[in-house]
Length: 427
Image 1 (cartoon, rainbow, N blue to C red):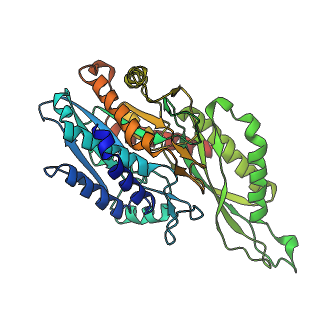
Image 2 (cartoon, rainbow, N blue to C red):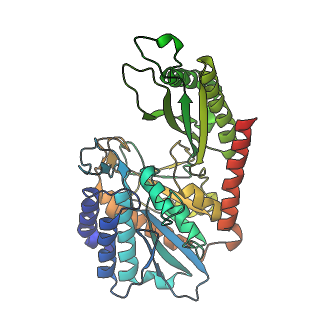
Image 3 (cartoon, helix red, strand yellow):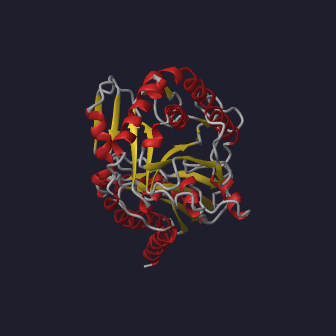
C-alpha cells in the first residue's frame, strides 16, 4: 500500500530530474532535489556528504554487524541531440539514472514509513554517487589538478574516500536497453571493462597544392588506422564482447595544408582484464603500422577506464528467490553479458556487488529518443520487488561467502594493469 500511495510523488521527482539533467560531478540541482525529498520523508535523517555531489545515509542500529548498500547514480550523459537535452550543457538522462534515484527514494520512504528495516539483521545505506558516466574528461582533469577528485568515476572516488569501508555488499539497479513486451528484470548481466587509448599521429606539414610530395599526411595515417581496426575485428574473440570506437579528438587541419598531427581516441572494451591486454597489443600494432606505412610516427598513451564487472552469483540467488514468489514481474533474464561498462566493476573488486536490470523504456539507451514508458512498473512495482529482495536477505546472508579487498589493493591492481600494458607497448 505504501508503494501505491507514494507513486505519484516519486514519479514527479523522477520526471523533474529527467527534464533537468546534469553531468558528473556537477549534479548540484539533482542533489538538492533528492536531499529535500529525503528530509521530507525522514526529518531526523543524517546525511554524509562526499566528493562534490555525492551523499550517503544509513538506516539501522549501529550494533548490527552487516551493512548493505543500495546505490543510485546521479549523472546524465552528454547527448546534445537528445529530445530533452539541456540546451547549454548538452546533458541528457538517456541512461536511466533518473529512475535509479526515484527507485531509491521509493525504497527509502517505504522502509522509513513501515519501519520494517528495524527488523532486519543488517543496516541499509543509500549511497547516491556522482559521475558514473566516463565523459566530460577535460572538466574532470581540472578537478584532479585542483585536488578536488582523484578518479574520473564516482564510485572509485567514493572508494578512495572510505565511503564503502563499512559496506559488506552492494546492490545497484539499471535500466535495460530496448523495449520489452512483458515486464522484465535481469540478473548476472556482466559488463565489460575498458582502457582509454589516445593515438597522436605525427607527420610533416607542407602546402597542399604547391608541394604535397614532400609531406607526411597525419590524417591519412589515422584513416589507415581506422581501416586496420576494421579489418582486425575478425581476429578479436566474440566471447569477449570486444568494442572499439575511434573518434577524432584533436586536429588543426585546413584544406591548403597537409596535416602534420591528428589525435584519435578510443575506448577498448573487453569482458576480462587479460584479454584487454591482448587486444591492446593488437590495437597499438595497428596504429604503429599505419604510421610507419606513411613514413610518420605515432605517440601512444593509455588511461585505465573501469574494471570488468563480474556480478556476484551468490547474491543474485536472493533476487531469484524473490522473483519466484512475485506475480507482478513476468520475465527474468539471466547470464547475458554485454559490452557496456560501469564503475560498478571497480567497486565489485572490493566487495560483492550485483546490478538488477529492469525494463520499462523505449528508444535507444544513450540515444536521442530514450524515455520511460511504463512508470507504474518502474516507480511502484519494481521497488516493491526490491523490498522483497531485502526481506529475503534478512537473516540469510552467509558472511563466509562475502569478500573484502582494500582501496590499496584496488590501486595496486590498476597500477599492475597499466604497468603491464605500458611494458607491452614498448616491447
